[in-house]
Image (cartoon, rainbow, N blue to C red; front, side, top):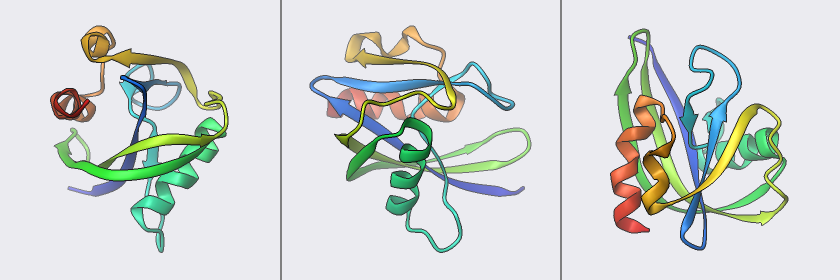
Length: 128
């Protein structure tokens, strides 16, 4: 099975995290932490900064690795490095997503997360 390496930003502001709803592809409509594929020659942190700038027109600061989620979708294996992040500059403009929400600890399950992202929720709640 093909492995796809991606990175995800858990953007935190006060006691809320930023979630986005996919606007394209097989998983359109599902909620996720923004990010994307690591290109050849990029570090995970470089990829995450680039992806957030492309998708949200925002510069972020990348903090600690929260976890690397391993998940088998039907046609590929996802390896997703998830990092705590904060906004440095920009207004989180949705360029590729349908919607976005700031979610507090008790609101996190109000959206329908993609399966790989669900695995991260409990860890985030503990560390918030």
